[in-house]
Image (cartoon, rainbow over all chains, first blue to last red; front, top):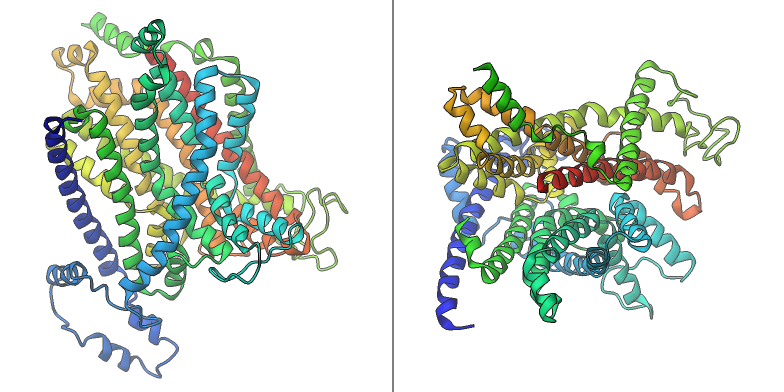
Length: 319
Length: 297
Protein backbone atom coordinates (compact mmCIF):
# COMPACT_ATOMS: atom_id res chain seq x y z
CA UNK A 1 0.00 0.00 0.00
CA UNK A 2 1.42 3.36 -1.00
CA UNK A 3 1.77 6.12 1.55
CA UNK A 4 -0.42 8.42 -0.50
CA UNK A 5 -3.28 6.01 -0.06
CA UNK A 6 -2.64 5.59 3.65
CA UNK A 7 -2.79 9.23 4.62
CA UNK A 8 -6.46 9.90 4.00
CA UNK A 9 -7.22 6.65 5.77
CA UNK A 10 -5.46 7.79 8.93
CA UNK A 11 -7.46 11.01 8.75
CA UNK A 12 -10.69 9.04 8.41
CA UNK A 13 -9.79 6.74 11.27
CA UNK A 14 -8.98 9.64 13.54
CA UNK A 15 -12.43 10.99 12.70
CA UNK A 16 -13.88 7.66 13.78
CA UNK A 17 -11.89 7.95 17.00
CA UNK A 18 -13.42 11.35 17.65
CA UNK A 19 -16.89 9.92 17.09
CA UNK A 20 -16.12 7.08 19.49
CA UNK A 21 -14.99 9.59 22.12
CA UNK A 22 -18.25 11.53 21.70
CA UNK A 23 -20.22 8.33 22.08
CA UNK A 24 -18.34 7.42 25.24
CA UNK A 25 -19.25 10.82 26.61
CA UNK A 26 -22.91 10.12 25.84
CA UNK A 27 -22.64 6.68 27.42
CA UNK A 28 -21.24 8.15 30.60
CA UNK A 29 -24.09 10.66 30.65
CA UNK A 30 -26.75 7.94 30.27
CA UNK A 31 -25.17 5.90 33.02
CA UNK A 32 -24.97 8.94 35.27
CA UNK A 33 -28.63 9.74 34.67
CA UNK A 34 -29.64 6.20 35.63
CA UNK A 35 -27.68 6.59 38.82
CA UNK A 36 -29.08 10.05 39.46
CA UNK A 37 -32.71 9.11 38.91
CA UNK A 38 -32.64 5.89 40.88
CA UNK A 39 -34.91 6.09 43.93
CA UNK A 40 -32.89 4.06 46.40
CA UNK A 41 -29.32 4.99 47.14
CA UNK A 42 -26.48 2.64 47.93
CA UNK A 43 -26.24 3.94 51.47
CA UNK A 44 -29.76 2.97 52.41
CA UNK A 45 -29.47 -0.52 50.95
CA UNK A 46 -26.12 -1.02 52.63
CA UNK A 47 -27.24 0.33 55.97
CA UNK A 48 -30.70 -1.20 55.88
CA UNK A 49 -29.92 -4.08 58.19
CA UNK A 50 -27.02 -2.60 60.05
CA UNK A 51 -28.09 0.64 61.68
CA UNK A 52 -30.74 1.02 64.33
CA UNK A 53 -32.10 4.27 62.93
CA UNK A 54 -32.19 6.03 59.61
CA UNK A 55 -30.43 9.05 61.10
CA UNK A 56 -26.95 7.61 60.67
CA UNK A 57 -27.70 6.85 57.06
CA UNK A 58 -28.89 10.33 56.20
CA UNK A 59 -25.96 11.84 58.02
CA UNK A 60 -23.49 9.79 56.01
CA UNK A 61 -25.37 10.54 52.84
CA UNK A 62 -25.61 14.30 53.07
CA UNK A 63 -21.96 14.72 53.87
CA UNK A 64 -20.36 15.43 50.46
CA UNK A 65 -22.21 18.55 49.38
CA UNK A 66 -25.98 18.28 49.63
CA UNK A 67 -27.36 20.98 47.33
CA UNK A 68 -25.03 20.74 44.35
CA UNK A 69 -26.98 20.86 41.06
CA UNK A 70 -26.92 17.73 38.92
CA UNK A 71 -24.67 19.06 36.16
CA UNK A 72 -21.95 19.91 38.66
CA UNK A 73 -22.31 16.45 40.09
CA UNK A 74 -22.02 15.00 36.60
CA UNK A 75 -18.95 17.05 35.76
CA UNK A 76 -17.27 16.15 39.02
CA UNK A 77 -18.10 12.50 38.50
CA UNK A 78 -16.87 12.64 34.90
CA UNK A 79 -13.65 14.30 36.02
CA UNK A 80 -13.05 11.47 38.46
CA UNK A 81 -13.77 8.89 35.78
CA UNK A 82 -11.33 10.51 33.35
CA UNK A 83 -8.65 10.53 36.03
CA UNK A 84 -9.32 6.80 36.42
CA UNK A 85 -11.02 7.10 39.79
CA UNK A 86 -14.19 5.01 39.56
CA UNK A 87 -14.66 5.05 43.31
CA UNK A 88 -14.51 1.88 45.33
CA UNK A 89 -16.92 -0.97 45.64
CA UNK A 90 -19.44 -0.52 48.42
CA UNK A 91 -19.36 -4.18 49.32
CA UNK A 92 -15.67 -4.98 49.30
CA UNK A 93 -14.12 -1.52 49.51
CA UNK A 94 -11.66 -2.33 46.73
CA UNK A 95 -11.08 0.26 43.98
CA UNK A 96 -13.51 -0.38 41.12
CA UNK A 97 -11.11 0.24 38.25
CA UNK A 98 -8.64 -2.40 39.37
CA UNK A 99 -11.37 -4.94 40.04
CA UNK A 100 -13.02 -4.31 36.68
CA UNK A 101 -9.74 -4.65 34.80
CA UNK A 102 -8.85 -7.83 36.71
CA UNK A 103 -12.16 -9.50 35.88
CA UNK A 104 -12.46 -7.84 32.47
CA UNK A 105 -9.40 -9.73 31.24
CA UNK A 106 -11.06 -13.03 32.15
CA UNK A 107 -14.20 -11.96 30.33
CA UNK A 108 -12.10 -10.99 27.34
CA UNK A 109 -10.62 -14.51 27.20
CA UNK A 110 -14.10 -15.97 27.37
CA UNK A 111 -15.71 -13.72 24.76
CA UNK A 112 -12.86 -13.78 22.27
CA UNK A 113 -12.53 -17.55 22.59
CA UNK A 114 -16.23 -18.10 22.10
CA UNK A 115 -16.25 -15.70 19.16
CA UNK A 116 -13.54 -17.84 17.61
CA UNK A 117 -15.62 -20.98 18.21
CA UNK A 118 -18.70 -19.37 16.67
CA UNK A 119 -16.77 -18.27 13.59
CA UNK A 120 -15.01 -21.63 13.20
CA UNK A 121 -18.37 -23.35 13.04
CA UNK A 122 -20.44 -20.73 11.25
CA UNK A 123 -18.05 -19.59 8.53
CA UNK A 124 -17.52 -22.95 6.78
CA UNK A 125 -21.27 -23.58 6.79
CA UNK A 126 -21.97 -20.16 5.33
CA UNK A 127 -19.25 -20.41 2.69
CA UNK A 128 -20.33 -23.87 1.59
CA UNK A 129 -23.97 -22.92 1.32
CA UNK A 130 -23.07 -19.77 -0.58
CA UNK A 131 -20.98 -21.77 -3.05
CA UNK A 132 -23.09 -24.90 -3.39
CA UNK A 133 -26.61 -23.61 -2.85
CA UNK A 134 -29.07 -25.47 -0.69
CA UNK A 135 -28.10 -29.11 -0.39
CA UNK A 136 -29.28 -31.61 2.20
CA UNK A 137 -26.04 -31.35 4.21
CA UNK A 138 -26.17 -27.59 4.17
CA UNK A 139 -29.75 -27.62 5.28
CA UNK A 140 -29.00 -29.90 8.22
CA UNK A 141 -26.03 -27.75 9.24
CA UNK A 142 -28.05 -24.54 8.94
CA UNK A 143 -30.82 -26.04 11.05
CA UNK A 144 -28.18 -26.99 13.60
CA UNK A 145 -27.11 -23.35 13.86
CA UNK A 146 -30.74 -22.32 14.35
CA UNK A 147 -31.20 -24.90 17.09
CA UNK A 148 -28.10 -23.92 19.07
CA UNK A 149 -28.92 -20.23 18.72
CA UNK A 150 -32.35 -20.78 20.23
CA UNK A 151 -31.25 -22.90 23.21
CA UNK A 152 -31.18 -21.31 26.66
CA UNK A 153 -27.45 -21.01 27.20
CA UNK A 154 -27.44 -22.04 30.87
CA UNK A 155 -29.39 -25.19 30.11
CA UNK A 156 -26.74 -26.21 27.59
CA UNK A 157 -24.14 -25.35 30.21
CA UNK A 158 -25.75 -27.65 32.76
CA UNK A 159 -25.88 -30.49 30.23
CA UNK A 160 -22.23 -30.01 29.38
CA UNK A 161 -21.30 -29.99 33.07
CA UNK A 162 -23.37 -33.09 33.67
CA UNK A 163 -21.72 -34.96 30.80
CA UNK A 164 -18.24 -33.86 31.77
CA UNK A 165 -18.80 -34.97 35.34
CA UNK A 166 -20.41 -38.31 34.67
CA UNK A 167 -18.57 -39.36 31.57
CA UNK A 168 -15.15 -37.84 31.96
CA UNK A 169 -14.93 -37.33 35.70
CA UNK A 170 -14.09 -33.64 35.41
CA UNK A 171 -15.32 -31.51 38.25
CA UNK A 172 -16.07 -27.82 38.42
CA UNK A 173 -12.98 -26.07 39.69
CA UNK A 174 -12.05 -22.63 40.73
CA UNK A 175 -10.60 -20.79 37.74
CA UNK A 176 -6.86 -21.11 37.50
CA UNK A 177 -6.27 -24.02 39.82
CA UNK A 178 -4.31 -26.82 38.18
CA UNK A 179 -5.01 -29.66 40.57
CA UNK A 180 -6.44 -31.97 37.95
CA UNK A 181 -4.52 -33.23 34.96
CA UNK A 182 -7.24 -32.44 32.48
CA UNK A 183 -8.34 -29.23 34.12
CA UNK A 184 -7.61 -27.17 31.02
CA UNK A 185 -10.34 -29.16 29.24
CA UNK A 186 -12.73 -27.94 31.85
CA UNK A 187 -11.66 -24.37 31.18
CA UNK A 188 -12.41 -24.87 27.52
CA UNK A 189 -16.00 -25.87 28.28
CA UNK A 190 -17.43 -22.40 29.00
CA UNK A 191 -15.77 -21.10 25.86
CA UNK A 192 -17.42 -23.82 23.79
CA UNK A 193 -20.80 -23.41 25.44
CA UNK A 194 -20.83 -19.66 24.92
CA UNK A 195 -19.51 -20.05 21.39
CA UNK A 196 -22.23 -22.51 20.47
CA UNK A 197 -25.21 -20.89 22.04
CA UNK A 198 -24.67 -17.16 22.32
CA UNK A 199 -27.57 -16.68 19.92
CA UNK A 200 -25.47 -15.23 17.13
CA UNK A 201 -24.48 -18.27 15.13
CA UNK A 202 -27.55 -18.45 12.92
CA UNK A 203 -27.28 -14.75 12.17
CA UNK A 204 -23.61 -15.02 11.28
CA UNK A 205 -24.42 -17.85 8.88
CA UNK A 206 -27.35 -15.99 7.37
CA UNK A 207 -25.58 -12.67 6.91
CA UNK A 208 -22.37 -14.16 5.51
CA UNK A 209 -24.21 -16.53 3.19
CA UNK A 210 -26.38 -13.78 1.75
CA UNK A 211 -23.57 -11.31 1.25
CA UNK A 212 -21.22 -13.90 -0.20
CA UNK A 213 -23.77 -15.31 -2.62
CA UNK A 214 -24.69 -11.77 -3.66
CA UNK A 215 -21.06 -10.98 -4.39
CA UNK A 216 -20.53 -14.31 -6.14
CA UNK A 217 -23.30 -13.50 -8.57
CA UNK A 218 -21.78 -10.11 -9.46
CA UNK A 219 -20.41 -9.62 -12.92
CA UNK A 220 -16.82 -9.06 -11.92
CA UNK A 221 -16.76 -12.52 -10.39
CA UNK A 222 -18.09 -13.87 -13.67
CA UNK A 223 -15.24 -12.07 -15.44
CA UNK A 224 -12.71 -13.46 -12.99
CA UNK A 225 -14.05 -16.93 -13.55
CA UNK A 226 -13.83 -16.48 -17.34
CA UNK A 227 -10.24 -15.30 -17.05
CA UNK A 228 -9.41 -18.29 -14.91
CA UNK A 229 -8.44 -16.03 -12.00
CA UNK A 230 -9.07 -16.96 -8.39
CA UNK A 231 -12.69 -16.29 -7.46
CA UNK A 232 -11.86 -16.46 -3.77
CA UNK A 233 -9.31 -13.68 -4.10
CA UNK A 234 -11.74 -11.42 -5.90
CA UNK A 235 -14.66 -11.97 -3.60
CA UNK A 236 -12.68 -11.98 -0.35
CA UNK A 237 -12.83 -8.31 0.58
CA UNK A 238 -16.42 -7.49 -0.24
CA UNK A 239 -18.00 -10.87 0.20
CA UNK A 240 -16.14 -12.13 3.24
CA UNK A 241 -14.17 -9.57 5.22
CA UNK A 242 -16.80 -6.84 5.36
CA UNK A 243 -19.80 -9.04 6.29
CA UNK A 244 -17.82 -10.82 8.99
CA UNK A 245 -16.53 -7.68 10.66
CA UNK A 246 -20.01 -6.15 10.38
CA UNK A 247 -21.81 -9.01 12.04
CA UNK A 248 -19.14 -9.57 14.68
CA UNK A 249 -19.17 -5.91 15.69
CA UNK A 250 -22.95 -5.93 15.81
CA UNK A 251 -23.03 -9.05 17.96
CA UNK A 252 -20.39 -8.20 20.56
CA UNK A 253 -23.03 -6.82 22.98
CA UNK A 254 -24.97 -10.07 22.73
CA UNK A 255 -21.89 -12.17 23.40
CA UNK A 256 -21.06 -10.02 26.42
CA UNK A 257 -24.62 -10.52 27.64
CA UNK A 258 -24.32 -14.27 27.18
CA UNK A 259 -21.04 -14.14 29.08
CA UNK A 260 -22.94 -12.90 32.15
CA UNK A 261 -24.93 -16.14 32.20
CA UNK A 262 -22.11 -18.50 31.24
CA UNK A 263 -19.79 -17.05 33.85
CA UNK A 264 -22.48 -17.70 36.41
CA UNK A 265 -22.94 -21.32 35.30
CA UNK A 266 -19.25 -22.17 35.22
CA UNK A 267 -18.09 -19.99 38.11
CA UNK A 268 -15.85 -18.05 35.74
CA UNK A 269 -14.48 -15.06 37.67
CA UNK A 270 -15.33 -12.50 35.01
CA UNK A 271 -17.01 -9.15 34.68
CA UNK A 272 -20.47 -10.63 34.11
CA UNK A 273 -20.45 -12.55 37.34
CA UNK A 274 -19.32 -9.44 39.14
CA UNK A 275 -22.12 -7.48 37.46
CA UNK A 276 -24.60 -10.02 38.74
CA UNK A 277 -23.19 -9.80 42.24
CA UNK A 278 -23.24 -6.02 42.07
CA UNK A 279 -26.85 -6.00 40.90
CA UNK A 280 -27.80 -8.20 43.84
CA UNK A 281 -26.05 -5.91 46.30
CA UNK A 282 -27.06 -2.71 44.51
CA UNK A 283 -23.35 -1.91 44.45
CA UNK A 284 -23.59 1.18 42.22
CA UNK A 285 -19.94 2.14 41.71
CA UNK A 286 -19.07 -1.39 40.70
CA UNK A 287 -21.89 -1.89 38.22
CA UNK A 288 -21.29 1.58 36.77
CA UNK A 289 -17.67 0.67 36.18
CA UNK A 290 -18.70 -2.61 34.59
CA UNK A 291 -21.25 -0.96 32.31
CA UNK A 292 -18.72 1.63 31.20
CA UNK A 293 -16.10 -1.03 30.57
CA UNK A 294 -18.53 -3.21 28.61
CA UNK A 295 -19.59 -0.22 26.51
CA UNK A 296 -15.90 0.46 25.92
CA UNK A 297 -15.46 -3.09 24.60
CA UNK A 298 -18.40 -2.64 22.25
CA UNK A 299 -17.14 0.72 20.98
CA UNK A 300 -13.70 -0.79 20.41
CA UNK A 301 -15.27 -3.58 18.37
CA UNK A 302 -17.22 -1.24 16.15
CA UNK A 303 -14.19 1.04 15.82
CA UNK A 304 -12.22 -1.90 14.44
CA UNK A 305 -15.12 -2.72 12.13
CA UNK A 306 -15.24 0.85 10.77
CA UNK A 307 -11.47 0.84 10.35
CA UNK A 308 -11.61 -2.37 8.33
CA UNK A 309 -14.44 -0.94 6.24
CA UNK A 310 -12.48 2.19 5.49
CA UNK A 311 -9.30 0.29 4.69
CA UNK A 312 -11.18 -1.97 2.28
CA UNK A 313 -13.24 0.73 0.69
CA UNK A 314 -12.60 4.37 1.61
CA UNK A 315 -15.94 5.35 0.11
CA UNK A 316 -17.65 4.01 3.24
CA UNK A 317 -16.32 6.93 5.21
CA UNK A 318 -18.57 9.32 3.35
CA UNK A 319 -21.71 7.64 4.62
CA UNK B 1 -56.85 13.51 -9.84
CA UNK B 2 -58.37 10.30 -8.59
CA UNK B 3 -56.75 8.41 -11.43
CA UNK B 4 -53.31 9.72 -10.44
CA UNK B 5 -53.85 8.73 -6.85
CA UNK B 6 -54.74 5.28 -8.04
CA UNK B 7 -51.55 5.31 -10.06
CA UNK B 8 -49.50 6.27 -7.01
CA UNK B 9 -51.05 3.54 -4.97
CA UNK B 10 -50.28 1.01 -7.66
CA UNK B 11 -46.72 2.09 -8.12
CA UNK B 12 -46.13 2.60 -4.43
CA UNK B 13 -47.40 -0.86 -3.85
CA UNK B 14 -44.92 -2.90 -5.79
CA UNK B 15 -45.18 -5.67 -3.25
CA UNK B 16 -48.76 -6.53 -4.07
CA UNK B 17 -47.90 -9.91 -5.58
CA UNK B 18 -49.00 -12.51 -3.03
CA UNK B 19 -45.98 -13.90 -1.25
CA UNK B 20 -46.61 -17.57 -1.99
CA UNK B 21 -46.05 -16.87 -5.67
CA UNK B 22 -42.46 -15.78 -5.07
CA UNK B 23 -41.57 -18.09 -2.19
CA UNK B 24 -39.67 -21.35 -2.61
CA UNK B 25 -41.11 -24.54 -1.09
CA UNK B 26 -38.68 -24.56 1.83
CA UNK B 27 -39.62 -20.99 2.75
CA UNK B 28 -43.26 -22.04 2.75
CA UNK B 29 -42.46 -24.87 5.16
CA UNK B 30 -40.64 -22.45 7.47
CA UNK B 31 -43.46 -19.93 7.29
CA UNK B 32 -46.13 -22.48 8.06
CA UNK B 33 -44.11 -23.79 10.99
CA UNK B 34 -43.65 -20.25 12.27
CA UNK B 35 -47.33 -19.47 11.88
CA UNK B 36 -48.16 -22.69 13.73
CA UNK B 37 -45.95 -21.54 16.60
CA UNK B 38 -47.57 -18.10 16.67
CA UNK B 39 -50.98 -19.74 16.68
CA UNK B 40 -50.00 -22.11 19.50
CA UNK B 41 -48.77 -19.15 21.54
CA UNK B 42 -52.11 -17.39 21.09
CA UNK B 43 -54.10 -20.54 21.81
CA UNK B 44 -52.18 -21.27 25.00
CA UNK B 45 -52.58 -17.66 26.08
CA UNK B 46 -56.33 -18.00 25.68
CA UNK B 47 -56.34 -21.41 27.38
CA UNK B 48 -54.40 -20.01 30.31
CA UNK B 49 -56.59 -16.93 30.56
CA UNK B 50 -59.80 -18.94 30.57
CA UNK B 51 -58.40 -21.54 32.99
CA UNK B 52 -58.94 -24.39 30.56
CA UNK B 53 -56.00 -26.50 31.71
CA UNK B 54 -55.40 -30.25 32.28
CA UNK B 55 -54.41 -29.63 35.93
CA UNK B 56 -54.24 -26.76 38.35
CA UNK B 57 -50.79 -25.22 37.68
CA UNK B 58 -50.34 -24.22 41.34
CA UNK B 59 -51.55 -27.45 42.90
CA UNK B 60 -48.75 -28.99 44.98
CA UNK B 61 -48.66 -32.77 45.11
CA UNK B 62 -46.01 -33.98 47.53
CA UNK B 63 -46.61 -37.64 46.68
CA UNK B 64 -45.55 -37.12 43.09
CA UNK B 65 -42.36 -35.08 43.08
CA UNK B 66 -40.57 -34.92 39.73
CA UNK B 67 -42.60 -37.69 38.20
CA UNK B 68 -41.56 -39.00 34.79
CA UNK B 69 -43.71 -37.99 31.83
CA UNK B 70 -47.05 -39.69 31.45
CA UNK B 71 -47.60 -40.81 35.02
CA UNK B 72 -51.09 -40.54 36.50
CA UNK B 73 -52.39 -38.28 33.82
CA UNK B 74 -49.49 -35.82 34.01
CA UNK B 75 -48.60 -35.79 30.33
CA UNK B 76 -45.24 -34.06 30.80
CA UNK B 77 -44.62 -35.19 34.37
CA UNK B 78 -44.38 -33.00 37.44
CA UNK B 79 -41.78 -30.59 38.78
CA UNK B 80 -39.92 -30.44 42.08
CA UNK B 81 -43.08 -29.53 43.98
CA UNK B 82 -45.30 -32.01 42.23
CA UNK B 83 -46.97 -29.42 40.02
CA UNK B 84 -48.10 -30.42 36.55
CA UNK B 85 -45.53 -29.29 33.99
CA UNK B 86 -47.86 -29.15 30.99
CA UNK B 87 -50.27 -26.78 32.72
CA UNK B 88 -47.40 -24.63 33.88
CA UNK B 89 -46.00 -24.55 30.35
CA UNK B 90 -49.32 -23.40 28.95
CA UNK B 91 -49.85 -20.74 31.59
CA UNK B 92 -46.18 -19.75 31.46
CA UNK B 93 -46.71 -17.99 28.14
CA UNK B 94 -48.69 -15.33 30.03
CA UNK B 95 -45.45 -14.19 31.62
CA UNK B 96 -44.22 -13.12 28.18
CA UNK B 97 -47.36 -12.03 26.49
CA UNK B 98 -48.14 -8.54 27.78
CA UNK B 99 -44.55 -7.55 28.68
CA UNK B 100 -43.45 -8.84 25.28
CA UNK B 101 -46.11 -6.81 23.53
CA UNK B 102 -44.95 -3.75 25.48
CA UNK B 103 -41.35 -4.34 24.39
CA UNK B 104 -42.35 -4.87 20.77
CA UNK B 105 -44.66 -1.85 20.70
CA UNK B 106 -41.91 0.34 22.17
CA UNK B 107 -39.28 -0.97 19.76
CA UNK B 108 -41.50 -0.54 16.71
CA UNK B 109 -42.88 2.89 17.56
CA UNK B 110 -39.58 4.41 18.69
CA UNK B 111 -37.73 2.75 15.82
CA UNK B 112 -40.25 4.00 13.29
CA UNK B 113 -40.07 7.53 14.66
CA UNK B 114 -36.28 7.65 14.50
CA UNK B 115 -36.19 5.87 11.16
CA UNK B 116 -38.65 8.28 9.54
CA UNK B 117 -36.90 11.32 10.99
CA UNK B 118 -33.54 10.09 9.75
CA UNK B 119 -34.68 8.72 6.40
CA UNK B 120 -37.32 11.20 5.29
CA UNK B 121 -35.78 14.49 6.40
CA UNK B 122 -32.17 13.46 6.84
CA UNK B 123 -29.44 16.03 7.51
CA UNK B 124 -28.99 16.92 11.16
CA UNK B 125 -31.84 14.66 12.24
CA UNK B 126 -30.09 11.76 10.54
CA UNK B 127 -26.86 12.48 12.42
CA UNK B 128 -28.72 12.83 15.71
CA UNK B 129 -30.64 9.59 15.30
CA UNK B 130 -27.51 7.72 14.23
CA UNK B 131 -25.85 9.03 17.37
CA UNK B 132 -28.69 7.86 19.60
CA UNK B 133 -28.76 4.48 17.87
CA UNK B 134 -25.03 3.96 18.32
CA UNK B 135 -25.36 5.04 21.93
CA UNK B 136 -28.06 2.50 22.65
CA UNK B 137 -26.21 -0.20 20.74
CA UNK B 138 -23.11 0.30 22.86
CA UNK B 139 -24.64 -1.21 25.97
CA UNK B 140 -24.68 -4.98 26.23
CA UNK B 141 -28.36 -5.53 26.88
CA UNK B 142 -28.03 -7.86 29.82
CA UNK B 143 -25.53 -5.59 31.56
CA UNK B 144 -27.79 -2.58 31.02
CA UNK B 145 -30.72 -4.54 32.44
CA UNK B 146 -28.62 -5.50 35.46
CA UNK B 147 -27.77 -1.82 35.93
CA UNK B 148 -31.46 -0.89 35.75
CA UNK B 149 -32.39 -3.69 38.13
CA UNK B 150 -29.76 -2.51 40.57
CA UNK B 151 -30.82 1.13 40.26
CA UNK B 152 -34.59 0.65 40.30
CA UNK B 153 -36.25 -2.66 41.06
CA UNK B 154 -36.41 -6.11 39.46
CA UNK B 155 -39.69 -5.70 37.62
CA UNK B 156 -40.52 -7.47 34.36
CA UNK B 157 -42.14 -4.36 32.84
CA UNK B 158 -39.05 -2.25 33.55
CA UNK B 159 -36.89 -4.95 31.97
CA UNK B 160 -39.13 -5.09 28.92
CA UNK B 161 -39.01 -1.30 28.58
CA UNK B 162 -35.23 -1.55 28.42
CA UNK B 163 -35.48 -4.37 25.87
CA UNK B 164 -37.90 -2.33 23.77
CA UNK B 165 -35.80 0.83 23.82
CA UNK B 166 -32.60 -1.04 23.01
CA UNK B 167 -34.30 -2.88 20.15
CA UNK B 168 -35.43 0.39 18.58
CA UNK B 169 -32.13 1.23 16.77
CA UNK B 170 -32.29 -1.95 14.70
CA UNK B 171 -35.83 -1.10 13.56
CA UNK B 172 -34.80 2.50 12.95
CA UNK B 173 -31.90 1.58 10.70
CA UNK B 174 -34.08 -0.79 8.68
CA UNK B 175 -36.82 1.81 8.24
CA UNK B 176 -34.25 4.45 7.37
CA UNK B 177 -32.60 2.39 4.65
CA UNK B 178 -36.01 1.38 3.31
CA UNK B 179 -37.08 5.02 3.07
CA UNK B 180 -33.82 6.03 1.43
CA UNK B 181 -34.42 3.27 -1.09
CA UNK B 182 -38.02 4.36 -1.67
CA UNK B 183 -37.11 8.00 -2.11
CA UNK B 184 -35.26 7.11 -5.30
CA UNK B 185 -38.53 5.84 -6.72
CA UNK B 186 -40.81 8.19 -8.54
CA UNK B 187 -43.96 7.72 -6.58
CA UNK B 188 -42.92 9.76 -3.57
CA UNK B 189 -41.85 12.62 -5.81
CA UNK B 190 -45.17 12.31 -7.64
CA UNK B 191 -47.07 12.32 -4.37
CA UNK B 192 -45.24 15.46 -3.25
CA UNK B 193 -45.95 17.06 -6.61
CA UNK B 194 -49.64 16.26 -6.23
CA UNK B 195 -49.61 18.21 -2.98
CA UNK B 196 -50.21 15.32 -0.64
CA UNK B 197 -49.31 16.11 2.92
CA UNK B 198 -46.10 14.70 4.33
CA UNK B 199 -48.10 12.88 6.97
CA UNK B 200 -50.13 11.10 4.30
CA UNK B 201 -47.01 10.17 2.36
CA UNK B 202 -45.24 8.89 5.44
CA UNK B 203 -48.04 7.00 7.07
CA UNK B 204 -49.88 5.72 4.04
CA UNK B 205 -47.46 5.39 1.19
CA UNK B 206 -44.29 4.63 3.07
CA UNK B 207 -45.17 2.96 6.33
CA UNK B 208 -48.41 1.22 5.50
CA UNK B 209 -47.82 0.18 1.92
CA UNK B 210 -44.10 -0.50 2.03
CA UNK B 211 -42.91 -1.06 5.57
CA UNK B 212 -45.62 -3.13 7.17
CA UNK B 213 -44.09 -6.51 6.34
CA UNK B 214 -40.74 -5.29 7.64
CA UNK B 215 -42.39 -4.22 10.88
CA UNK B 216 -44.15 -7.56 11.23
CA UNK B 217 -40.84 -9.37 10.79
CA UNK B 218 -39.23 -7.21 13.44
CA UNK B 219 -42.15 -7.93 15.77
CA UNK B 220 -41.72 -11.70 15.41
CA UNK B 221 -37.97 -11.46 15.98
CA UNK B 222 -38.63 -9.18 18.96
CA UNK B 223 -40.87 -11.77 20.60
CA UNK B 224 -38.11 -14.38 20.31
CA UNK B 225 -35.71 -11.91 21.86
CA UNK B 226 -38.08 -11.24 24.75
CA UNK B 227 -38.35 -14.93 25.59
CA UNK B 228 -34.58 -15.43 25.53
CA UNK B 229 -33.92 -12.36 27.67
CA UNK B 230 -36.49 -13.40 30.25
CA UNK B 231 -34.96 -16.88 30.33
CA UNK B 232 -31.48 -15.52 31.03
CA UNK B 233 -32.86 -13.15 33.65
CA UNK B 234 -34.77 -15.96 35.34
CA UNK B 235 -31.54 -17.87 35.61
CA UNK B 236 -29.89 -14.84 37.19
CA UNK B 237 -32.82 -14.50 39.58
CA UNK B 238 -34.24 -11.22 38.23
CA UNK B 239 -36.96 -12.63 35.99
CA UNK B 240 -40.52 -13.60 36.78
CA UNK B 241 -40.58 -14.75 40.41
CA UNK B 242 -41.27 -18.30 41.43
CA UNK B 243 -44.92 -19.06 42.19
CA UNK B 244 -45.84 -17.46 38.87
CA UNK B 245 -44.61 -19.83 36.18
CA UNK B 246 -42.55 -18.64 33.25
CA UNK B 247 -40.57 -20.88 30.92
CA UNK B 248 -37.36 -19.30 32.10
CA UNK B 249 -37.88 -19.96 35.80
CA UNK B 250 -39.15 -23.47 35.02
CA UNK B 251 -35.88 -24.29 33.24
CA UNK B 252 -33.96 -22.65 36.05
CA UNK B 253 -35.69 -24.49 38.90
CA UNK B 254 -35.56 -27.78 37.03
CA UNK B 255 -31.88 -27.37 36.31
CA UNK B 256 -31.13 -27.58 40.04
CA UNK B 257 -32.05 -31.26 39.87
CA UNK B 258 -29.89 -31.96 36.85
CA UNK B 259 -27.08 -33.53 38.80
CA UNK B 260 -29.48 -36.12 40.22
CA UNK B 261 -30.19 -37.25 36.69
CA UNK B 262 -33.71 -35.75 36.59
CA UNK B 263 -33.65 -34.07 33.21
CA UNK B 264 -37.29 -33.80 32.45
CA UNK B 265 -38.50 -30.85 34.59
CA UNK B 266 -35.91 -28.64 32.95
CA UNK B 267 -35.87 -30.13 29.46
CA UNK B 268 -39.59 -29.72 28.76
CA UNK B 269 -39.60 -25.92 29.11
CA UNK B 270 -36.20 -25.71 27.42
CA UNK B 271 -37.63 -27.57 24.42
CA UNK B 272 -40.66 -25.28 24.47
CA UNK B 273 -38.33 -22.27 24.38
CA UNK B 274 -36.26 -23.86 21.62
CA UNK B 275 -39.21 -24.70 19.39
CA UNK B 276 -40.91 -21.34 19.92
CA UNK B 277 -37.83 -19.26 19.28
CA UNK B 278 -36.94 -21.33 16.24
CA UNK B 279 -40.44 -20.78 14.95
CA UNK B 280 -40.19 -17.01 15.34
CA UNK B 281 -36.71 -16.91 13.81
CA UNK B 282 -37.61 -19.08 10.83
CA UNK B 283 -40.76 -17.08 10.22
CA UNK B 284 -38.93 -13.78 10.35
CA UNK B 285 -35.98 -14.94 8.28
CA UNK B 286 -37.98 -16.54 5.50
CA UNK B 287 -40.36 -13.59 5.24
CA UNK B 288 -37.25 -11.45 5.01
CA UNK B 289 -35.81 -13.66 2.24
CA UNK B 290 -39.01 -13.39 0.26
CA UNK B 291 -39.01 -9.61 0.59
CA UNK B 292 -35.39 -9.31 -0.50
CA UNK B 293 -36.04 -11.49 -3.52
CA UNK B 294 -39.04 -9.36 -4.44
CA UNK B 295 -36.97 -6.21 -4.18
CA UNK B 296 -34.35 -7.66 -6.51
CA UNK B 297 -36.92 -8.42 -9.21
